[in-house]
Image 1: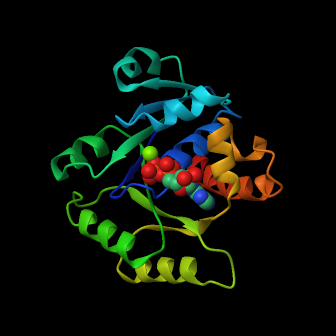
Image 2: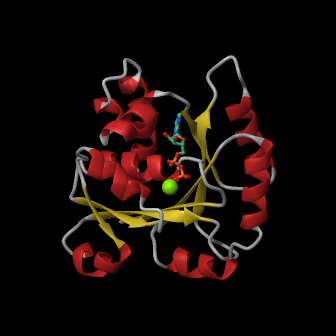
Length: 196
Ligand SMILES: Nc1ncnc2c1ncn2[C@@H]1O[C@H](COP(=O)(O)OP(=O)(O)O)[C@@H](O)[C@H]1O
Ligand SMILES: [Mg+2]
């Protein structure tokens, strides 16, 4: 399976999602992260520590991909509208992370207008503030009402993710006391992606 993580803004957790989804999938099958962002943030992450899956850049991806069961592609922010169709053709699942704030949702909706008809994508509410904030649920409802395909769960905001990125590991290995709870959100996403 090829999963592409795409976003219309920086700082919405694309790289964090690519790393953790790949970590989830690698529990079951050989998984490769393809770092498609010229900023190389996924590569830097892996370089600072150790991830449970392999990682390569776009140039090596074609050769390496055949040895892997799952590929998770991390992309740069703001793809050109004309890139969207190619990106869609090149994957089985397209995941669009977004934070639940109005500016991010606006950027997302603007970009979805450029998405080809019938595109198979799912929006993932990411970095969602903890309860009692209702931002996550409200954003899901807003997007559903707009007729968009959105996952019915969210990835919550935890500082454990920053610690994980600094250490070059996944959130459950970050040493943060909330690491396992944070990881349960990506387990939910992983089950959804694997359809189990
Ligand atoms: N669920 C989360 N909770 C808290 N911080 C997060 C979460 N996901 C990502 N972050 C942080 O947000 C920032 C941007 O994340 P990143 O994955 O690099 O986004 P992008 O790839 O879209 O630019 C980083 O500092 C990262 O640690
Ligand atoms: Mg990134």
